[in-house]
Length: 584
Image (cartoon, rainbow, N blue to C red; front, side):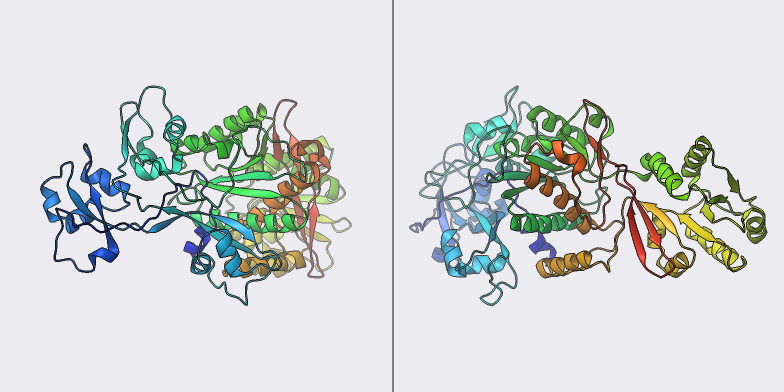
């Protein structure tokens, strides 16, 4: 699916503005350029009201001042009340999408009538959709339209001067428009925010709105969810930001993976609605704060989102106040997790897990001859981990050796290797250069010397060393590991290509799997335990594909952090074993 088509799957729920599409009787405008042909079919007239400007009229009809001047050259010299202007007939604009799962006996025609759209609309929103691909169980996108053609005579925008204490939410309610509409009509809001004294352009509410193909959501701050009730989940991410800390294509891929988990859990009985918000810039939270003032955001049972520290702080405070479960998908919760029982940090840094890694290492390799390998020229970029592991080994009364970092790594190893005991070698650097120096030295060790290599998450990306990892019975620690030969991973790839007609981005970790794993875990929790799933979190086991998951509560008043951990074992028989070392 092309990038455009991917965004069609995002339901930007910050609001859908509706209007009435009507055929208008053509009246010759007083400022018209009569040289234009075919004007009756493509244009309509607007009678200028008192106080209107070319800009306000252009905004009201979703056109440009330049286009008004092109059609009405005399208008460039000024307009006054009562003037007639030629205006392009506005086209329907897609304002969002919702998912629809095809039921048995449904047809393209029937669904188009159900949502008051055309079959062409459906096909445009779902490339490749036709009678042969239209099958029960398949989820398709239903476009939601802003119909911007004005009914009757002039329907200009309203100018509103912002008073002290007003918010976008209060203004949107006062004029019965969405916050998204306010953003669209006032582009400066995204950069400057709402300021006292500033002038907002507000589209006037239509007299006869068209029916909307979305359900109205009650403005409630807490929802009790049982299996038979709808679970409302909000995805709040900066989907459109260029140059953010995470590539926007990866964020989209995360969302796509999450939707595959939604599809899977819906088949298992979960009744869920997914609402997706683009929250704007990572550094400017004005848009996010406005979105959180909507009834849609306040009705959610679960929030997943936020990338930057600023976004996470805003979402954490909102979730705590409204008692909504909040999952941080990528970043760190920081100090927020210490006092927010509704917060869940889905990923963790390896450095925060060094003590857990050391504990798992000691449990598995207590009887080994432990050797830290510091070769000449090493950058020793894992000295922090090595320091923690050495301290834990000392506490457990386990001795260890360290190579001398001389010019001859082979000689150094021969001095510390045990012949009658299993050896485990731990380089003090995760760099590829270290492996390049280490492998020839290991080949020179006498055959039959029992030897195991222990290393780092980065080694997963050094594909040229996979055979050597197997040869030396290697273990690596990681919070992420993906075996793409695994049947469940193959099934995921098949589904991903089927629905999105593209491959995953080559990255570590892969964001499509990360979205799927996060969705699978928390949707399973909701499906099994309801909205208060924290009661079963300690015993919840879900077959994730890439992410190790084990949530631990940080303290009695705080939230949860994922301390999941894998040891990945490259066995000498060329198989790979993924060992869950999470603290149980």
